[in-house]
Length: 366
Image (tube, rainbow, N blue to C red):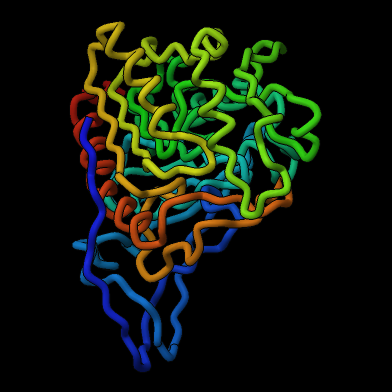
């Protein structure tokens, strides 16, 4: 496993600029539910920018001709991002975390590199469950079938990528559906945890279900949490639970069933949950079972939970946010600088990982 220590030079820029920028449109204040839009603006800039730190320019990241299409077929709620290059293409299904909504952050970025994205919501939007509670895996099976039928997409080249609870979900779906040929997880977990609703403090519930039955989940030691702390740190309760590995055995995701390579990315200072330890659980299980595909876990020293696709000029300004479901201020960990550096540094690895996997898969005869 590789550790990346984030460091960079920074500078303050002042002046008036006429630019096209990426605006992050938060879905219920959740980082892993952001949307991307382009806005042409003239602004006075006097802000702390880290332009020296990154070797990715706006032009390298975004092709403004990428097409985005609302998807509401077969009960699905999502957005399809299509590149300008001719089809057929592989596709990545992206799923977000406990904030709900559509995880569109990777959409335009990957489509700009010739990889379509189906950014999929699974709760917290119209005609979907309100909370992360007993979400049926069959919903995602429908998404896989939809991609397989789409004329612009390759039925045998479907990957999945997710952040936070979406990272847990990505591993779970890939272990369940062999059609998925690669997995990317930001701040992921190799263990299934409870669902999330406003009364989680008093009543644990399942996050996922299949065939009408709730899937087993590990119990969080809720009594060990300081519910009056602000911003609140959830990670200690997970660490306490992980000290008794026998208690979480039934909730471990059978990642050895995944039919492709796995790339996990985490931060050592994640205060939402210990994503480094939780990713290590998945990696260790893959290695114990002699997984026949490449496996990698990149852990960034000092970074927190907010590692994901990079957003030039629009990195999250804080390391804590009000959680849309719980309604309390939650600490994400790390620092703005280290989180941004981890996101930018890991992005090229994500793109290379997906491109390499898709290049290995032969085209199907029509």
